Image 1 (cartoon, helix red, strand yellow):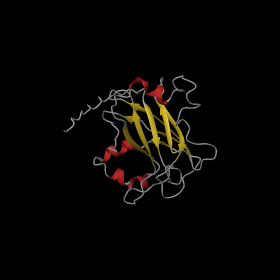
Image 2 (cartoon, rainbow, N blue to C red; image 1 turned 60 degrees about the horizontal axis):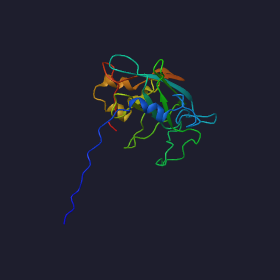
Image 3 (cartoon, rainbow, N blue to C red; image 1 turned 120 degrees about the vertical axis):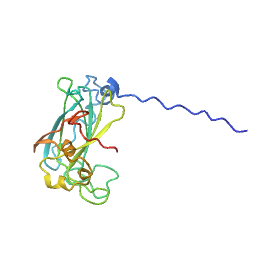
Image 4 (cartoon, rainbow, N blue to C red; image 1 turned 180 degrees about the vertical axis):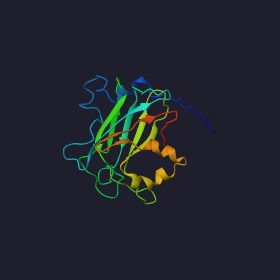
Length: 204
């Protein structure tokens, strides 16, 4: 006798909702005692190698308004171009650099800030070197699936010109949405969700 299988229906898709900050950044929400400090709040210490930089920015909606309830995570290589990951086979990354950070946008001005180091170049899957970059992940109310993008540096024009990913962007003027403004040690990277300046998002 063949047993009838009861297939479960897929759970409905949900946005991050207003609770993403409570679960991921409780100290930011005024909830003490969960973590000594919110995870991802600090990426460097006094022993971290490399050039210290600050990355500020906002997540801007289609109406030109900054989101004040978004959550940003970043991943990047260390100053030597190595990732703090078990899958990193090219060498040992800087033990004093996490390579990962998390920051909510400010409730007053919608600004996020990361204190990090300028990353080194890392190889593309075919071995070509990519330009120094930081990977961003964005989630907020109204975003069903987290959005991925990258930030490149305006003072790395030669490296940017030969970056394999930037070269794949068909409409060249849109590649500019992945390049930060400013200069070391302070960069600004605004992420536009919609509209004329919409940031290029990556399907990864």
